[in-house]
Length: 207
Image 1 (cartoon, rainbow, N blue to C red):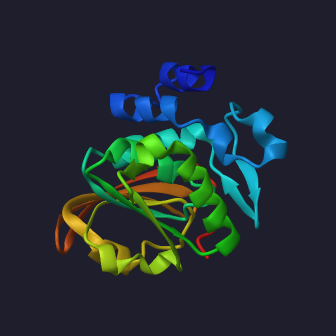
Image 2: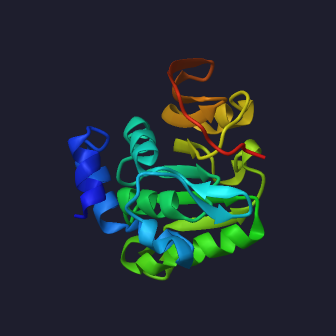
């Protein structure tokens, strides 16, 4: 366990054992451009090209703790970028789970997929990948693999897309940046959602 993970635990950002294990095993350095690898333990967002960033570690920790992913779940990861959140989610859901990673920038999607593949022990179930990558606009989700137990959105929207709400299972949870807030959404039934909002965050826009 590196000092970044220890600091996130001490500061209260990492709490759940499964998420702590994922952060310990999936090293952020593998998801950075070579010229920024020395910054892998810095608790800051870093550029990954194409006007996109890899999020600040404490922000990712906060999002995953709110999302509460579990073994065996089907999870949608929107704006997969470098692949870091996808790999973390693969570790968490395990061999019986599934992660659908959506990215709209072709170069980023290929790079992110290659980064995730570095962790074959955690992202493969035999010859099958726990993660599937698709080059699509994440605002519409990915209905072909719905419904989802969890939906994680890694870029900011002006409002929560209705299509994402439809693709969430009853009892499912979504974490999504809306404007400058982080929003937690829990689907109580088809038309009833519980919502919590945490202000003070900055994300690249979901485009």
